[in-house]
Length: 451
Image 1: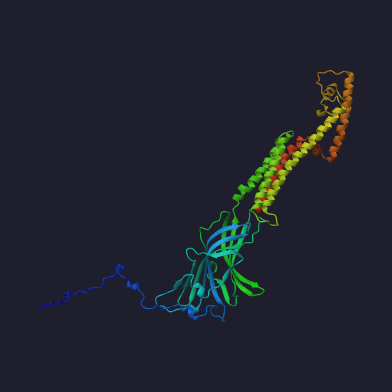
Image 2: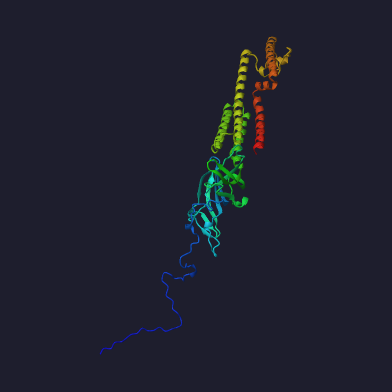
């Protein structure tokens, strides 16, 4: 007989505790039941049930769309291209009952840019813009917030480069007013009413906004209707800002160098008239330097058809420099003419012996022995014979007649002008006073008019 041992499963002893199943090795923490969705989520926005290619209340009155803007930065102002670049937050406010939802817990729902392509949004664009883009780092900088009653907030971060009509007639002592214009592209004022949501408070600016060349004086908003002959009337919003140019940079780079070149050209008036290389090289150097300054200023400016304030100053300075060169040309020419006349007189009267430089002129024929000797260039101690004295008297009387004729001509033309032409040193003497006084007078008029 074979005995078979039967084995029954052992019953576990009841301890009053319920064993929980051991968690999987993939989950070491207990699950948060508050974050587990129960069943299929309820779709609050029924986007697929409506046709969002139509504007809200299509066929009815115009839908009001409020706008407000926060300027983040004013990046650059270009005089050559006549434009400016601005980065801003553009926000739209409107009501679309098709997006209304009932919810006791959610006061609003916020979405990113993916929902924008599925619903209707205002087609606002920037008038006179050259380039613009929506920032997309790290994702599209677009926010859409929907409220239970159907109100919508649509915000985006944009950088736009727009045209600015600048007037450079007072450059660089000018102020410029630029505008960024917003308008609906497709909807006229009968379909879409674009307006500033909070009036002047709709435009906010960062306190840290600054530019290197300009002082931002003020921002303000305006609105008006724009008419197109083929499509109709549109609401247009304006962001206006006024800029005043800093003058210190141009004082250092343009005005001071030009003034110094003009003053340097005056140095030639104190140089001897016989130092031709020194005076000519100084005049040419100042003229070429002024030409370089004018070329450098115009290279950074647009080619406008009117005269700018800086052009007036530079060209007047250039004229002063050029006149200083012409002044020496006149001095040199008159010196040559005077030397030629003296040479002819020496050849005609070989015994003059320095008589041209005498200040004594005998008009009545009376003379003394000492005067005749002095006119002949001899010292008073030198005793002349009777024949020599007669020769000197004849020469003296001949020169007296020439001096009288020249004096009569001088009275007709003016004694001052005659003396200047007779003595070329006088031209330099008068230039030392006339040139600085004229330039100072010009500066007083210039800065009083344009500043």
